[in-house]
Image (cartoon, rainbow, N blue to C red; front, side, top):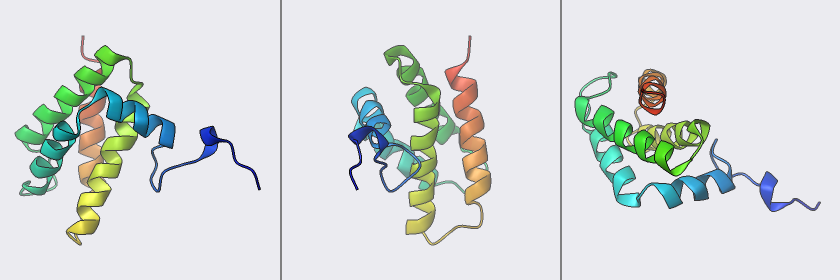
Length: 110
């Protein structure tokens, strides 16, 4: 079976071409800071540090023309990876919901 490169997907929700676009726009260090902030959260709510980093990511993505759905897919992937590595799936859905809401608000802020 012959697949074209546009239909291949990373082992996540984020398509390969979208991940490349996000990685070109947002530094790996910024995503590293997000992972640290998300790991340090005390509950399922988004910490002020995580919210600030998400705002930075979304603002930069908007300036660079990265579609919001690509950023949201990447952020969800990061949260899932953190939950898996910490063997903590209980609040994953809530953390994703809060992060997606924060991304949407940041991306479309006036």
